[in-house]
Length: 204
Image 1 (cartoon, rainbow, N blue to C red):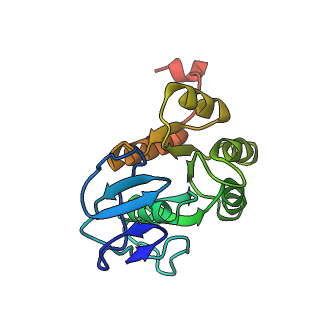
Image 2 (tube, helix red, strand yellow):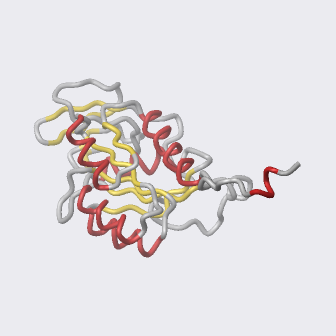
């Protein structure tokens, strides 16, 4: 099928590994054509998500409900958003609560959905990932933000950190790196604040 400049077999619906490095082969299965780049991606064994990305499930998970974290995903590429939604929905400790196609929409949806974690692309129309991060940190400073970008150089990372991003992950990295950074950001937010011992605590 041909959709959004993506050439895929008709039986393949979602991808997981994405890159936009010129002529770089990630794996076989599907070809993404964008801005002069040809990117091949592979598809996981399970091709359909249990719930539609961007919609709350009417039948929440029972066994993992207490352990799962909600995530909002923002990227201007429909294909990348769908692939990321599929990736996180396959993990027992994540539930995708919404998706956005630009930074402005991400800010609006974050205020409505109150996600535990926000995943932002760096380069988006209307409002880019850095400006969206600054706005989100003013509105909900406790929510960690992961930036998923084609740019992973030190200057970009420095700017992202300055804006309030918890971690910058390059799209050329394996998706396991993204998942690890997402879990790490959530764990950092859940750590209890340091409390100095009182005099009574020293007593036996």
